[in-house]
Every structure is written in structure tokens, then in C-alpha cells.
Length: 227
Image 1 (cartoon, rainbow, N blue to C red):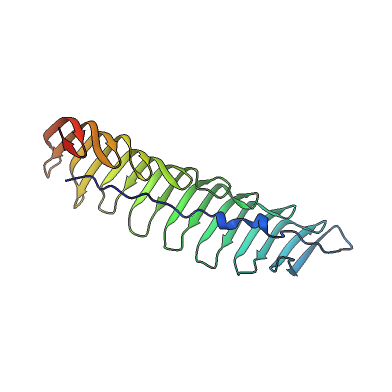
Image 2: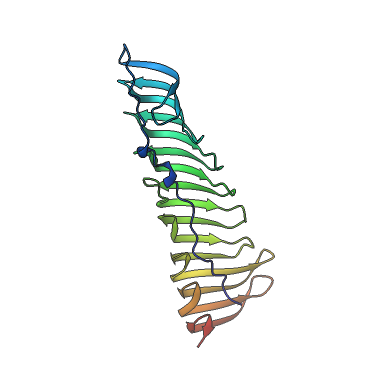
């Protein structure tokens, strides 16, 4: 039996929130420097309701974009900033911190296909510590870089798991794979991996139904085979 290697997994990155490309400030003429507006027609084609200061969105407000996406939260000098919630017409939602109009800091991203990521973002990229759960039943908790696994624990739908470093979505380096069937760990491999396979020095431990170790194989592995 072999560890289940996963293909490279990309979690959708919220770069579509490139709101810097829109005119996120209003070129209106007001008698007062600050005021509350309702249903303001944004020059880019959207509508805004909320606080304005010196002709720009400032403070709490709601912006409905031309294509129907909706942002509710904080603005600063015309830009989406600090905390808010972005609801896409493509059925994904992001709620959390923003900077320069993009998700940054802590937040929760609910994907259109039913997955959910909770953790750190950096200017629209999933980069930092967090956890992702898919609607298919697998989950990952650890560190991410540009939406890819770096190091952490990947738990499969059947309860089997790999804990360690990754490269291009596959186990790479020193890690531990636990193979589970019907809620019981049948065998465990501790050692080197390459491209999702047992490759290098490692130990395979087999267990009986009661969880007692019954066999240990150690040595150099090559593409899941003990040499």
C-alpha cells in the first residue's frame, strides 16, 4: 500500500479584489467636507452608501460594484481598508482584514464550491498560518505560501494523514504518514518523502487491529519500495 499523494492544490486567491483599478473615490462637490450619502453613483459605475470626507469614501460604508459584487465595511481615503466583508456574485465571500483594497491580515474565505479557509492573507494571497477545509472531506492546517501548502498536517477524508513539509502540493522532506481504515491506524511511515512517495531513509510500522505494533521495516526507500 502506498501513501495517497495529492496533486498540487491551489486554493483560489482573492486577487479579483483588485479594487485599486476602480475609482474608489467620489469627485462630488459638497458644501460640507464630510457627510453621509445614500445611493451615490460612483464614477466607475457602482453605488455607495455611507460616510464621505473631502469627496472620498471614509469610515463605514457599503459599495456595490458595477458587476454586482458588494463590499460592506471600512474605507480610508477612498480605499477599502481595515475590516470588512466582500460578497461576490460568483458565490464566494471574504470577511476580515483589508489593506490597499485587498485581503490582508486575518480573515475567512468561503469558496464557491463549499470550502473554507481561515487564517492569514497578504495583499490578496493566502500566505501565512491557517486552515482549509474542503467540502470533499479533506483538510489542511499549517502554513501557506501563495495558496500552496508549505508545512503542516493534511488529513484525508478516510482519516489518513500526512504531517510535514510540502513542495508543489506533495509530501517532500522528513514527515509522518498515518494510514487509517475504518477509524484504525493500520500502518505508519516516518522518514523521508519525495514527490509524495516514500523515498530515502525511513521506517514503516505495521499495527494489528488493537493498535499493537507487529512489524517494523527500516532502511532506504525508493519510490515507496524498501531497497
